Image 1 (cartoon, rainbow, N blue to C red):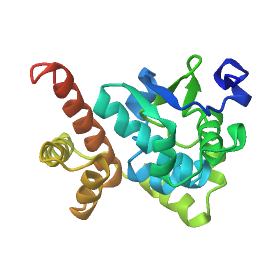
Image 2: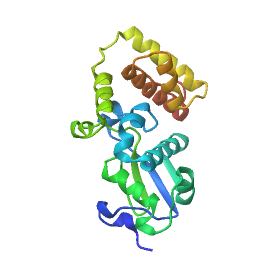
Image 3: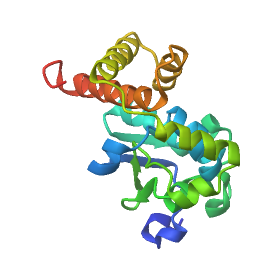
Image 4: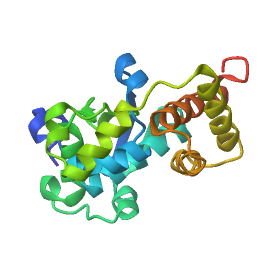
Length: 210
């Protein structure tokens, strides 16, 4: 079988039985971006990436958290998990989903059977926003024009998010709960990102590191 990761990025799909998924570290995007499991991705990136690629990135994010940034995934299992096929080489639905993640900068080849995947996706570019339906464009604008809240409100949102995550709630469930508690969208997103990262660091390095 030819090794697609050894070819050009435009041909980089991975019909291998085992894929090594590494965390793509990018300090700027890691700080400003959005978790693949967040409401922002669900609302604004979904139409850009497509459903299967969005689900794939969420699977990769879960695997990163579970395996501390380096996961070894059976592609057959991944295909079943997100409900797509893995037969047909470069033309299989799973390979096309991986290729789409690479095309939009969410992932990149990292060797013969490895891929680096962002654990935060950048905010949409202006041209991407302009291609959204008008209702979503307006929602995106409202989200990013909300006034900066006080440090007290941000600290409270962080405490709430961290408490929920420490109780076992998922990233998405925590963000939805803050939304139900009427925490403003940008503050909720920042709080959940912060709390999730604190919980990950504590799991890897102990309470002192967080």
